[in-house]
Image (cartoon, rainbow, N blue to C red):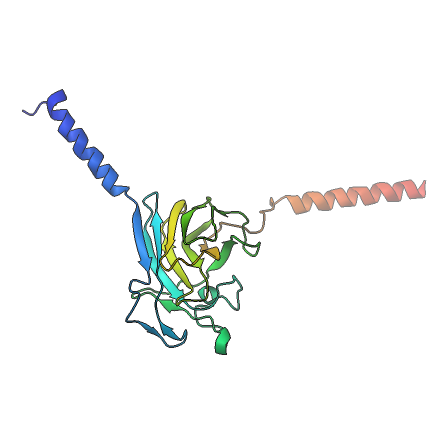
Length: 226
């Protein structure tokens, strides 16, 4: 029979520790996966820039989409929200989905670090206009299917990349051509019954308010007739 003592427990503990560290190791994903050999007809040129996102808490990451132009958080102009290219001519905002990706419908802008367009404010922190850094996404309840997008300058293609992330938390970003982080957007899909919505009203509240109003009216009428 196998007996566990200090001598044979040490290798077992080391193995378990190594397994835990491996499972929670930071995951890094580059988007687009290749910096050459892919032509974006709508965006106008070969892809010469790559974005890399690293999850510091072991969250799952995958390349969702990338494109040329802007991701401004507008429901009509932001290609991540519309699901297709927007604009015309030199002002086109293109989107190319990563291979095998199914576009997510019903995405909404949760936060944009450089303005207040999103449903939440200051969820994104730590963003600087540098090519590398660490950002943090605060917890948001009631939403899922999170998309984290980073926009850089217009001197290379693509100008932005979006990552599907399994959970919020801490992430490192890297833009390989030394382009700065212009702004960072967080998108998500509202869960059923979650997020920002109407505050439930107790079923008896309307009757109570009606009774109070009627009582007040009768009291006023009584005073008036005295």
